[in-house]
Length: 241
Image 1 (cartoon, rainbow, N blue to C red):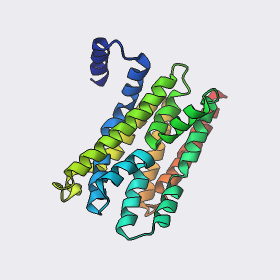
Image 2 (image 1 turned 90 degrees about the vertical axis):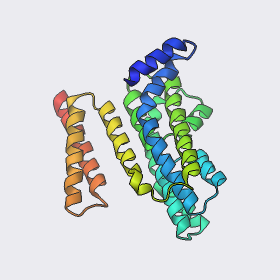
Image 3 (image 1 turned 30 degrees about the horizontal axis):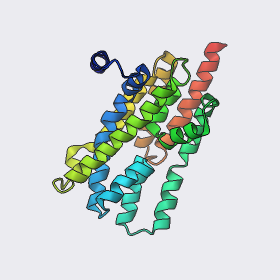
Image 4 (image 1 turned 135 degrees about the vertical axis):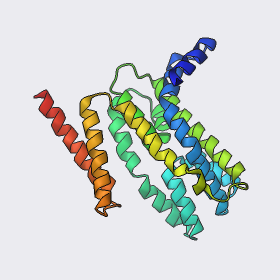
């Protein structure tokens, strides 16, 4: 359905670059996930007393959902500015690993392009980039479109949350926390294009649920990811041999 709508849009707007259209198609699951989550952030931020301007600036400059939500919680708890900065910095250390993993594909990019690209990489856009950069037809234009579309949707959701903050008293009733898992599932399905990846995804997901039931809630995802990734590497090598 999405591809048909985009194709019709492309036919009516032939002046739009095919690279941009391809990026928008890839970013669609992120867009529909970021808007409600950004909305939740906007509502929460206003509820704890952060101004509308500062709320929008966080989504523009920080652009990291988990860090922004953590910062709001720390602000509510009365934490100092340095505590908020250091906590969000530690939470975002994983971005060094994500961009390092993409660096082999970006060797020919200019420094200003690398800076602009790295600024907008998130967990979700990284999932798309990691899957697409290995192909020969992933254009730089498409990569930037994915990043820009993701941030615009996040900013849009934040703005909607700010506007709606006076009308919404309880965001739990909207089930906005479902949007993030649903978005990750959508991205996982897009990246699962062979049996090996499907087996690894099923294994990691099952182990995560199992470890959670064994009361390892704070470690279940990390342990399951390590086991799943290791199994994937071993399985790939075994198939090649």
